[in-house]
Amino acid sequence: MRREAGLRYAALTDTGKREQNEDAYFAGRMNGHYLFAVADGLGGHACGEVASRMAIEILAEAAGEGLPETGPATVLERAFERANAAVHAYNQENGLNAGTTLSAAIVGESGRCWIGTVGDSRTHIVTPASVWHTRDQTYVQGLVEAGTISPAEAILHPQKNVLTQALGLSARVRIGLDVAELTGGVLLISSDGLHDYVPEGVIREIVLAGDPDTACRRLIDAARDAASTDNTTVIVAKG
Image (cartoon, rainbow, N blue to C red; front, side):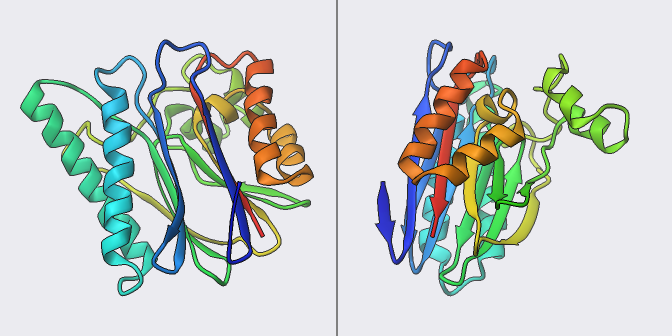
């Protein structure tokens, strides 16, 4: 666990039942801000682990260049666009279809969080009263928003992993941008190996109960207990 300027954070990744881990992550300080991010290379696509690593490296590089002179929201938007262009160019050059999700949060000293998301990795803000999280860019999320199925039914839906957006698969990408307040809450970023299998109530109980290191270990254990078949990566940060 790391503690810097009052914010404690930890990260953990688990290969699970997959042959290799296609997740990548970043957790650390960046020019007066914190940067946390999880990328999940697309399973079944060639070189998913390359795409996720490229996305994280480009994000960290862009944040290092842009902060603090450029606003965090602009830094995120530019970083996502650069990562998408880089992975897409890699695909064009090598005749591949590598792709990745990416959810990233830049956290200021005040506790304000600027969040960017493509795909179905999630950033959550967890408090004793509620769990807020970013919108998944998936086919099933569209069904939930249309009222066709419930959030509980979405967890069991056979097409829950069908993405409507991912980095690298086309020349342009639609980025979800949000602003949230961390003060009084806990930040959790996860790949879908966690939230596609573990109920929200269990996630909330775990992240509120202990320090970030303990929470990360318990979240990975909960994914295993829920028979997650995917790689699982989690980042937990709290004041």
